[in-house]
Length: 295
Ligand SMILES: CCC/C=C/C(=O)SCCNC(=O)CCNC(=O)[C@H](O)C(C)(C)COP(=O)([O-])OP(=O)([O-])OC[C@H]1O[C@@H](n2cnc3c(N)ncnc32)[C@H](O)[C@@H]1OP(=O)([O-])[O-]
Ligand SMILES: NC(=O)C1=CN([C@@H]2O[C@H](COP(=O)(O)OP(=O)(O)OC[C@H]3O[C@@H](n4cnc5c(N)ncnc54)[C@H](OP(=O)(O)O)[C@@H]3O)[C@@H](O)[C@H]2O)C=CC1
Image (cartoon, rainbow, N blue to C red):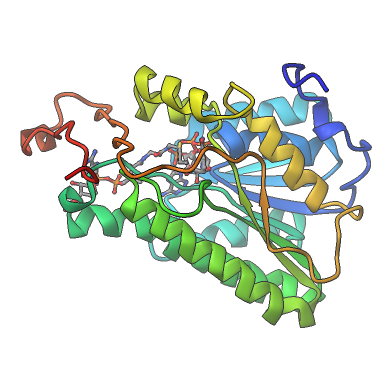
């Protein structure tokens, strides 16, 4: 099978596969979230996307509408108290009950574990774990539990055993993965499926902005296919799993789009330059290039 072909639009699914559904994608303005919003819309879903910056959201909405779909954007920082309620309120008001929630918003910096401050760890967990749970609970209570159906997606990391430089972020995703597994058992009584997708390393703007070319080359070498994944690899899987074709009975709660060679002791931390080099936080001790796992 050729693996370098462009991904088919809509993940190759029928253009009416999601007709009548409402999907909410957090972080839907860029990368994996953008591809997911486009794929779900290509299948006929009406889509709500949120993120902090309005510009990328507007671009995605324009793209969806140009293809004949419907998209509402909500600019919000979902870590802030109240913003989750606002986002869900907008979704319900615009399109009615949400059928598909994709908890995609997330991010982190990389640093040797011992240099991650409590505030840095907290910043990452507030987004990956707390905001994700707040969004899931809000959508479940206001839409999915009352209508006794729904599909909730979570994004984890692969490899799943821990990643050097990501002690805070990988542990946050482990929490999310466990949440998906627990909810899939608990909420099956409401007809709600909860699924965790663990992408490998996916070539997105987020990856380009936050990691060096050297990190990227090393990641590419670690992928058996020899190339990074595409956002459409992940969005196509999510679109399929949100469709009626997806397995419904005790669905495996974790799906992986790619597996990388697991980090072995000695794998150096990726470097993560700050986006704004004039940031006052640059005054912290320079990040070392030492290998935290090598004695
Ligand atoms: C397989 C895995 C591959 C995954 C790839 C992807 O996910 S690609 C997707 C990639 N996309 C993304 O990753 C999305 C973009 N990422 C982000 O927006 C940020 O990384 C964020 C999620 C932490 C946002 O947090 P925010 O706006 O709240 O940040 P803030 O500036 O207010 O700082 C809060 C705390 O964090 C600390 N701190 C921050 N940076 C560093 C650093 N480099 N070093 C050390 N520490 C750092 C900072 O000092 C402070 O702690 P303190 O001083 O109070 O103790
Ligand atoms: N690319 C990869 O290799 C992998 C990515 N992932 C995860 O997949 C998800 C998407 O990543 P990717 O597309 O690569 O990266 P991006 O950085 O492009 O996507 C992150 C999205 O989340 C939004 N976001 C971030 N913080 C907040 C916030 N506080 N409130 C609302 N929205 C927010 C961002 O928009 P804005 O900045 O405007 O708020 C952005 O649209 C992330 O959770 C990432 O960690 C997981 C494994 C691998």
